[in-house]
Image 1: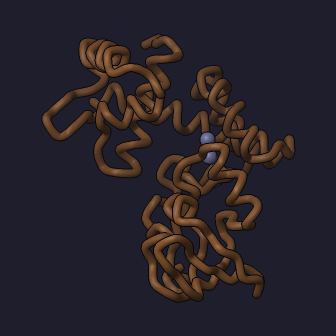
Image 2 (image 1 turned 45 degrees about the horizontal axis):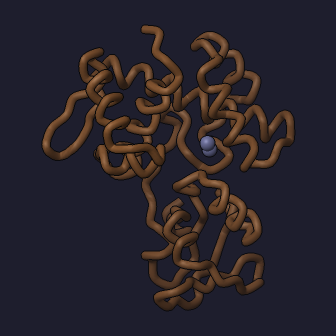
Image 3 (image 1 turned 90 degrees about the horizontal axis):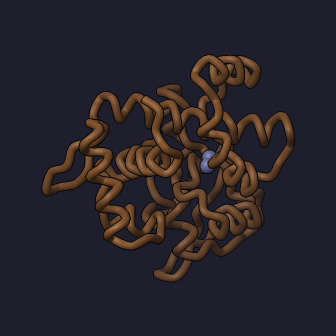
Length: 213
Ligand SMILES: [Zn+2]
Ligand SMILES: [Zn+2]
């Protein structure tokens, strides 16, 4: 099925919302794309007619056909980011932006070639899983108690989040020691240096306890 780029973007956003929260919602699509409710409901009806999604009172789900397309797009996005950061040394903010365009370009067999060239990476540079090589289970840094953790994933790949996370050096794979917390921020030790992580950023950093790895 050949879909328009905007429709492909909707499918991918639905997939990522389901990945993150278990269900996708029209209200969250409106926020994600910053468009009017009318525009979103038109696109949602179109996807429903094409048999790509189903809707219930709880929210939106992908059909098998919708899932197949969304999985290809997500794989294309995450492999493109790896290609851009690992081979071309482009920073992870620009890599995410350029991947939004590249994800529509690669065919499945091209993706296999890229995957192989990159050595079958298990995540994108921001920690999101590629295929089922890893999961996206963990806890938000804003919700865990004191202890030693490993950064697993940056949840929303928005520029302001990625910029601050890079400043704090909270890259996926980094070991951190959560030493103190209050309602406004979390104090963490990274390489024995204490840093304050604001709540909005801590909400976007997924961690796992160190001993569980
Ligand atoms: Zn991205
Ligand atoms: Zn990414």
